[in-house]
Amino acid sequence: MKRIFLLLALAAGLTALLSGCAAYSNQGNVGGLEGLNGRVDYSDIEDIGPIKSGTLKLFSTQPDTLNPILTKNRYVSEFLGLVFEGLVKVGKDQRPAPALSESWECSEDGKVWTFRLRKDVFWHDGSPFTPEDVKFTIEVIQNPALDSVYKANVRNIEKCETVGDGAVRVYLKKPDSLIPGLMSFPILKKEYFKGIDILDRSSSPNMHPVGTGPYRFLSYSQGESVELVVNNNWWNRGVQDNTAAVPYIPSISVRIFRDAKTAKQALGMGEIDLYFHEGAETNREGLSESFLVRRFPGRNFECIAFNLDDPILSDKHVRKAIAYAIDRSWIVENILGGEAFIADFPVHPNSWVLEGTEFRIYDENREKATEELEAAGWKKEDGVYRKSIGGRMRRLELELIVSKDNEIRCKVAKEIGAQLKELGIELKIKEVSKDTLLKEVNSGNYEMALIGYRLALVPDLTFAYSSDEANYGKNVAGYRNELVDGFLSGIQLSRDEKEMKMLYAQVLDVIEDEVPYAGLYFNAEYTLYNRRIKGKIEANVWNRYDGLTSWYVLGEDQISN
Image (cartoon, rainbow, N blue to C red; front, side):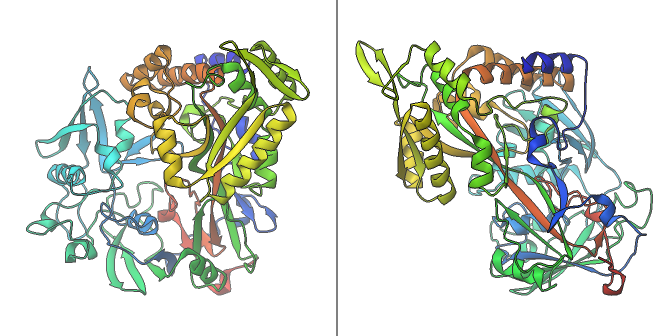
């Protein structure tokens, strides 16, 4: 089996990067650059020499605040990542790397983590960065009155304390080896908010941010722009490229637009240099060859959840038959326009968890689907499968619920129904409101449901496969397996990457066989760049401006197509 190869590869310590190969090789370059009329390689934007000049023009919709902990605007959150920093930075492979914290260590029981801070970091106002700032930020996020997007990052933190003048110590409620990656939330300056109601989004400190990042806030004109300028005292200046010239771009102008569609039009008119979008929006009409595209798997994993308490779906052979019967390639190409990456599991394709492995199991195979149904005792008569269950003859008829508010999912559901019918499974498609779907799924009042999960910043699989989550969390299939629980617990306790990869492989090995969810795909995301941007273009799902500090921009007279 493929999995035997996987375990041998892991045991041998293979660490080949997943970059458009293995499970996703037939999906194109995972995270690659494309021209608007075809693929191009990096030589098309080869550096011709850094230029320290110009202004980079980014975009956002109207800011709700300029406090990165409070904002609910994803565009604001992205550009504030140039102003603020976390203790840790997460790379495109989901590995945590030092940022404001230069190192960390853990206690034997896995519940106490000490993060040692850099001593050469200063806030944009010139004051030193301190452990008190970290403690303050954690406590702000934990404030019950605050619904921060970073709430999940600190949910497992019992308390935080400062250790001298150079470290912070966090005490966890339960062991979690993935906690370093969760410490990537932006850090606020404690003294800057002294005597201020931090929950007042429009207060002066919340609209005039002070961070530690490569760019500092200059001004904000409501409805017009947010202006940033280079931080000449940035602690990381020159470290990554061994040159004191980084960042090269002296200023950034974040233009404010009514909505993303308007911003995209502005890109075509040359008013901004970069545009990004979540999802499968591929209409590039009106955009010239002055733009390049970086395309990569997003965070949204689409799948079918099976109700494991259902008398028919409780049999894994039926679930496997359904997984084999679905032609995901056809769905991706014909319904999603190619803008998705086929996947069996909710593990990001670029994650270190999958490096050197192949996790594409359930490609369409009608012969295997038939074998699975026959192995479960289903017999086909007049084109429909039948079986006696509990003394009563049952037709193989199931219901799939889907949100009527999601047009794409409705189309996908209907196509899945048609594909299963060809196999001999009758699938009724029930379109309901989003609220009704959530209610029925959470109560277990369903048979099959077409749903989506938005992945966390770290490769935590407990949300879908832990028995604990089956009681009250996101494990809506109600999946329970003591062996899997043991592997997941081992991952949380381990601090050795090789051991963790083996444990992840064992989890997925069991999941492959039991199929509590039938994986479909990750929606694609992309970023459009004006060709005048040069340097290391490394945008990824975790950081759309990754590598920006090494970019430089050409003047109009320097651009050649």
